[in-house]
Length: 281
Ligand SMILES: [Zn+2]
Image 1 (cartoon, rainbow, N blue to C red):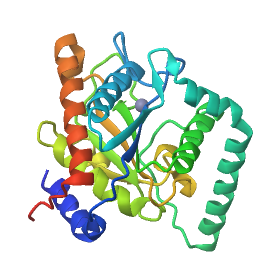
Image 2: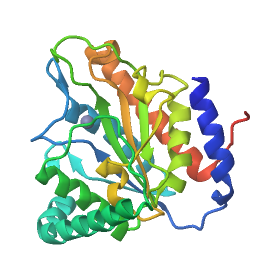
Image 3: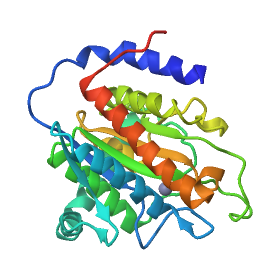
């Protein structure tokens, strides 16, 4: 816990100066409930991760929607991708691929020349071609539509022999862009504000690679891998907890967790954009 707070303090101290008064333009937020009805991510018992992700995302959506200072978007609902996103992916598939491949090339050149140091990431499943197009498509859309922040919502799991047994790790983690990515600077404080709220009720991940709860990552497409998110598009990927945790195994406590996690996340978002309060060291 101490490590998380210390990290937050460092980020706040470094990046607080830009948190000045904003113009009257609404803050544009894109919520991305991770996975979808076809590929639903993790599963424990009959509870699928994609449904959990959507449950939390919809709650955050409803909280922010009521606040006139925000303009909030979401990529999918119970039926699948919203018309806007489904149309965008199909109409722009070719452009999304060239956007991705161009970025990969440029990033690759910088790695080769030593301008960028590749960092080893916490293991995650690599995206299939279809998923890659969706995720890079979301980045392209977020740049074009000038999102102030993109929040990817997930629940965690880790590879083990039998996915039906209860795993050993618990707790939440907030992934943010690595320091060499263009949108790192704004994302760092944003991620810290959300983590700080969640920490009021939940423990940070006990997995050693997620220690402290705030994890910088260069490889996750959601965070803008290959430099695909513009500097003003803050990005975080939430892992709200491990899918087999006790509180998620029971209907009532799971739904309570959705409510609480959404409230705390929304509070972190509002604190960041409107009431920056740097914690004392
Ligand atoms: Zn996931």
